[in-house]
Image 1 (cartoon, rainbow, N blue to C red):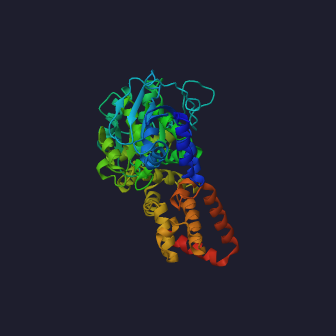
Image 2 (cartoon, rainbow, N blue to C red):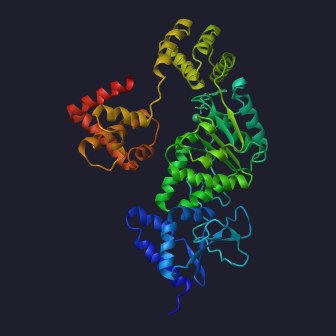
Length: 482
Ligand code: ADP
Ligand code: MG
């Protein structure tokens, strides 16, 4: 019997499936192979239709060897594979088809003139995403912007003038300025999140029809991981490609990990940028110093404007304090404000923190806000907030304490001492960082959130019932305070 494109593809699928065993692989199979539709066979060239450009690139990146073997097995050594890509109609109304010679000439790209593609996209037009509000046809999404971080209350100073001005210009003309992407960078607590959020709010105010979305890199990573698990990666990508102004906060979070997340973002970035959609990114380092991020992503980040947020000078710090006080309707003697402004000079978050503690102190103890009280408080405050604990740091302390190699946390071993160290790491990470269970799991040997939850409960139980364990916890707690 002569082979048809259908039977050839069935043979390929059978071969691919046989070579993708295990739970993870089965999911990957249904995500990346089941949606493929064979469309024609000419000689020994099989054409398959894939739902998006991203999908095609993903196959090429991850499964090219497997595809090659499969098609050669079915059609012999001279077999070739062509892709027919469904373009996203949210960007171009007419269904374009691109055919890309893959096996043999992976680098050439031809526009196909003649391949009529019947767009059967059941399952591809839905955009399940936590941000989509149900019941609304046209995409309406929750921007995740905070109402309190406005441009109006982002005090201007020498430290942020360029960034603020660029942000304002961009809000007037999103995607149409030279500031695309706009990259806001600077140290902790210098207003990156505030300003990025404020630009988002201003854009919405000036252009109510525009879709703005704010996400942290951590959320993005987590959604991407969830999508992979649920077989909805393609929906995930489509969703992001439909946003007009995309704000991604703290991109340094992906450094030295999240290769696939970066990969996905790279594609989203390109699609948005080509469509003149605006991208705003924040990071704690300048693009050129962002190590551990994919270099082609970093080079994209340099396309637009990188604007630094610096530590505010003392005048700006005073204006910030005055504004916060006015907002809260609290009065404070000038010498106290000056004292705080002069002594807390590293970042604005600490400045605010000091102010709040001072107000709390005075009202709890029914004491006037005096310079003396400010002195005591600032002393304590500056000492206790200087260290930010990271999951990496927690791993290091725990592993050093038990004298085990730090990478054993990442290993699959079930050795008791390692399991214990891993559980303690998870427990402290939950206690001392703001990371979600899922993120903690990801960083502690690629475990899921249920495992982390279980670890936290186990440690808490053992702390109650097991003297030795309680001693370890207390001892470790001391180490973290050192
Ligand atoms: P980052 O994201 O850089 O770590 P944030 O944006 O979270 O910093 O800022 C920390 C705090 O400082 C926020 O409460 C923010 O409102 C405040 N802040 C920072 N810069 C300014 C500014 N120029 N004017 C007013 N408040 C500011
Ligand atoms: Mg921030």
